[in-house]
Image (cartoon, rainbow, N blue to C red; front, top):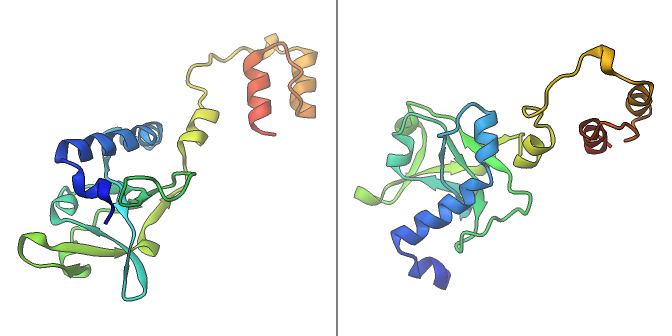
Length: 168
């Protein structure tokens, strides 16, 4: 275990988790779950398999759990910061393997059973059209049509050029 992980108070851990969550806020909103439960997890090796563990309190929330894989210092393992979902299962206590005992019990989930969320914060930012207003077709120019057909940012409409650039 790293020195940082040993020295963190609960408040410091909470602050780190909140800072990591901020990166995924737009994805949670796009998924229609702005208050989604998120907690980053350390990938562990158990019996030759890569797994993560959940405390009963995390799975008793009766909601999907979102996570990303981190090291013991709360640094994301993948620079692309993929998000994973463990879909709520009311039978988790009967179906998942456990480790520990008493109040220290944890449920073990192989990472290949985690569902990768195929939407990223970058995708949301690049494809966010919510702030744009549609223009009527009568306002389209020959230059706009050329830009669309040729896939070149040649329009005098900045928003159209930005859309073209993001799709190149």
